[in-house]
Amino acid sequence: MTDRFAHLENLLEADVQQRLLSDATRGQLNTAGYFHAEGLIQPRVCQALIDALAGAEFIEVRRNDRRGDTHFFTVNGTDLEARLPGMDGLYRYLGDVAAHLAERPLCGLDDLSIGLSLNCTPPGGAFVRHFDRNDVSASVMLNTVAGGALELWPNIYSSSVGALGRLANRTVMQLSLLKRPVRIPAAPGDVVFFSRRTLHGVAAIEGMRSRVSLIMAYDQPGVTYSQDQDYYGRADTRITLETLNA
Ligand SMILES: O=C(O)CCC(=O)C(=O)O
Ligand SMILES: [Fe+2]
Image (cartoon, rainbow, N blue to C red; front, side, top):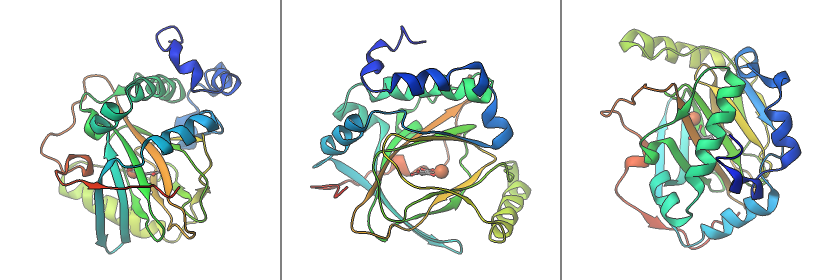
């Protein structure tokens, strides 16, 4: 896999990459429900990505429900790849890493606009706890912020089968309030892989700086995403952020 992605050597820390793909890490995502790869992406790359996004057009996501408020800005993978060619390569490569950690075949989604996104969560913003619909996700954190930890309830449960499944998921989300999450503070270059059984969210941003992360979705080959579902990356309206303030 390293030949196919030779250019990624300029983006990744070689020693972290090597440890990540060792036999010792094979399958670890399944037992723990998540895997925290510290410092995988070079810090200068994280900063360059943030700088390159100033003046880009974002989709604003704002929701509130019983779980709380969600507010962030996002660039979907299609727009991101147009602005920064090569992001798709990083997405596909981290899919190979996810497959190693989960010990099963996994690949990026055909529809880049829901498979990959760059999220910018402003001061006061957050992402309420939820289950992702795909098999494994990766959050690539690009900077440090006050607050804004990635909160995980590993391997807690997730069922997407019909109305009963949704009800079960809602119940699990309620019960999660009784359980302390694993909190992973935002740190540039850290990548957190987690499975669809892991409930997760982003805690409120407390300081003056925005939290920036890349979100990557993976599924088993041949699994197609349901086309009728609602994804934040599919919205039509865009707003320009002159600076990410990150
Ligand atoms: O920004 C993050 O680290 C997580 C975002 C997330 O959970 C999602 O986009 O589904
Ligand atoms: Fe998520």
